[in-house]
Length: 427
Image: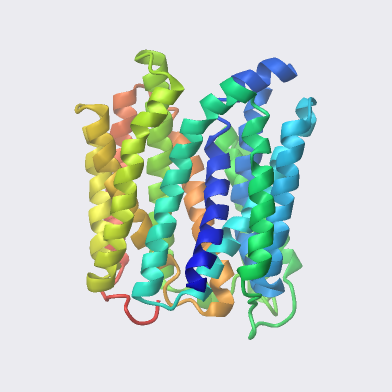
């Protein structure tokens, strides 16, 4: 029973992290008007969070392995909660953006640490697969909840409360985490920290997400140079941040590729549909949020069904089915009613996400669970940023959805790299 309470605490933290990546969308016009943002600058209330979050995930996961997962998780919650209070209390645009950056840093610590605690709490096989199925469902519900709650909260109480609601949640999470969570840390790793590796890979990931988000070629070039430097640093490091034993796993690499593709599809398609629904069809943000609930429900079903099938037949079959449904769903959205397309798309997303995530953490030692979680979360976050950047630049909703289907087909091909063995043994 204690493990289920642990999953409830960790799942709540993950829910809040996902919620805060989408709840601010609808509030941006109100924030821009009330705080008198300069034209174009209000987007940094969203981008500041996403860039920091995506860039620090790998670092946050590895720090949890080295310093203790409960300790690091509590620190992440504290940072996130304090930053949320500052966001909801300030009247200065620069302070708001800075607090959102800090909030993203706290989230980047919370998310991979929470996932690594799930991996170390639940035994490999059916038990862990069920937990990861729940995890995938929580992510889908959190994203839709942000779209649903952002508008009514802003209209009824003001945009400040989309941040201030995190205060009571954060306090409860701190108390419950301190009581329930084990203070696990890597026991077989040297007590040394690869500072050069951490600086180069974090800088590279921050610049990568920034370059994708802002369509900045200079940032992308700098990200590539820093990543090349990181590889050189890791080859010479005594205690590398990302050991070769982790990244040489074929299943881990394939799983992260599929997470990248899934992130591209879901974030890119949702952005395209949001713009089309509100600008061309006159659908309100609340109406669109309610419509996407169909996708969320289907993704929860896909996650639970997917983890059960993974246990019996292996990740490859589920990954293939998930990617195929993502492709079919994207195409269905070009011709069929919105709800129908979203149900097919959502079922594919749930199956693809849970199978990819199981693959991405398979065979990873407990000492490296935080690192594996950080890599997985980074792949999905970078994929989301890439999907938004690519699909938003394609002319026409129909064309963008066709491209999303092509991306999913690429993922279908990538799923062939996964082995077909079941995951009832070591995962």
